[in-house]
Length: 65
Ligand SMILES: [Zn+2]
Image (cartoon, rainbow, N blue to C red; front, top):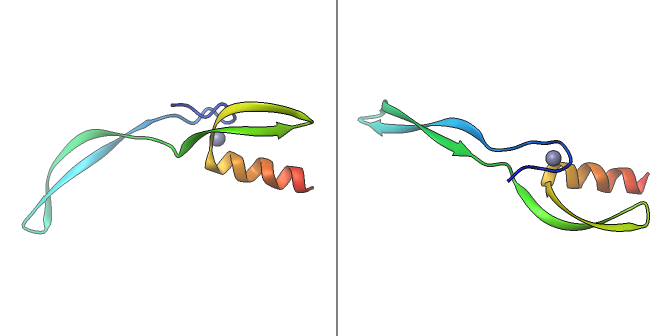
């Protein structure tokens, strides 16, 4: 799922396999951003957005002024 505010989406990362305290094998894994569906009041209009927690904080800060 993508953030509708900043467009942040899943990225590829390495899954590491550890044996005898060193990395023996790497495989691809998807790392998802912390995106949640939220109802936000932006300029008096209540919108439902798929938004990441970072953007939620940014918007909350803007609304406080
Ligand atoms: Zn975002």
